[in-house]
Image (cartoon, rainbow, N blue to C red):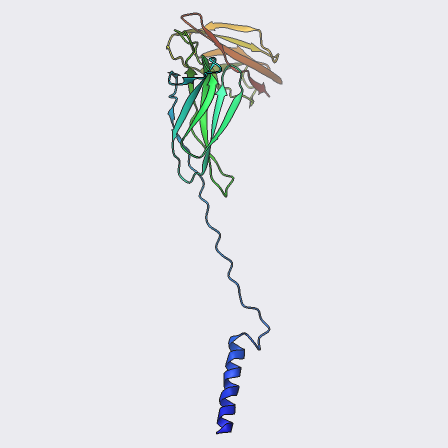
Length: 242
């Protein structure tokens, strides 16, 4: 009877030893946790201020009547944790960036000033972003009955482009718009100087021909004029001829 108890006790100890990993030099295999998949954000859809319109819903700042607070709104995008609201002053070229975790943001901007804006969608855990369309608008100003055209945007050649010297002429093309829809003409300044002063003349079209020479960098800008003699200057565009 004692022998049987001894054997039983020995078997129990052996079982416990084996179950606790005894008798093996190998470490147990640890399974790495599966990292969560972070999906890239999608682009937001712009809602307000609307494209090529006058924004007249801003709240005039009590301490500075030259500014008003505008609530920018856009549709929520998928896989997005936050948004960057990019607002560019088309008169100065300066860009204001505001951060939001919802699909709207109040921003104080100058009155009587043209702007363009767009949204950058961001997601935690990834450096990928998505950018919306770009819309332009005028922030309403006191006593303004007619607005100057929006500054022209280069279509061809694009800014910084390098083109072939196979031809001796090039067609400069641009686009623009106007809240009042009363643009009457454009003047194009075209030169090899970074501040172009040579005028190619006035045109009612959104393109004009210019003579070019190989191995030269050219600079150009467009002055848009409306029926009230309001004008707007585009940014400076440049391209190089090989």
